[in-house]
Image (cartoon, rainbow, N blue to C red):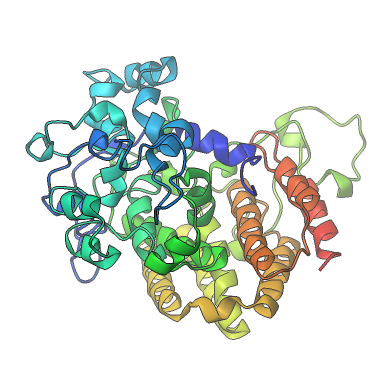
Length: 468
């Protein structure tokens, strides 16, 4: 399976959900509709609890049912393999206890809203059924919606999936709806966000890519019955949809001043971690470094910065806005036309340059990017991801390395996940241009921020490009 060996993603999934829950009265977009408008938890349906889905005749079978349209062992897979099922348990560990202490929380992590809002199905008490248990973590109804109205008809097997959705089941098979749901915790919303204080207290850096995370979390099999009931879209389309939705949400939160700092420093969680967190003991471009090997060992004598096309004329020593999602979105725009891709990148450059001069002007450029993302979202469809287009897309992703787009670790990890998603789609079409060894080489260069070296990643991309 294409993602099981990806150490980076697994490490993120283990501990990526300690999130801040802070109220905000700010409008979140031009229509004044909340960023996370009317998701499943907001519909008022009672959540009956994981136990309501876990019976052996429902989704808790020990092994697949042979004569059923679903295998009915989905709960068994979820409880064994899906990190969502362990999300609450993580709060009981020593790391969570330390984070809670460092944050000065009045309650332990497993009792604090700041943690429970993303580590569990933390709905109001009034919506918790008799069998509901908060310790189930991010359970079935966290994603599929409160079962009060749909559970009976769903169990009967006499209704269609569309009818279940009309009764409150959330349509997670729809990539746009799934992205909107997932980014609430994996990016943030107006009430919860992994700010820099939380990360400083011990929370790991947040990262998200919809197709990769779907595959790692998957507790079901996409077979002929699934396709008949719900349809299926390509990994590439899921990837593209997730990139755009996650980027939209990230920019909207910043533009609308959600979770901003009231102090001298800005809220650093919106900025590129590696702008500050990088090694000062290694040259970032050692292959081109011509200085004497015995030169001084102070950090100021080391090369720790390189120019980057998307940063415009922004020089070294700058805390740069995290544009890793925008880097990928610009490549998606390239698929439509080179002109659209170039225009999108110019907006990114203008945003970075404005960030060093005038925050209001920076917000103006971010708003322009949000508009472009919404247009781009409306333009993407499955027809864009035919075999010939996918090979061109792979080439575009790889070639952006020559412009230093992946100098940032956050961008490099997104590039790896993009290549995997596109390659997985090619494989379904019978193409095996990229091998497991190729993917493993890319993974090995992006295991962690602490060990990431841009030049090694560039070399891996060059090697991969030679095979296309």
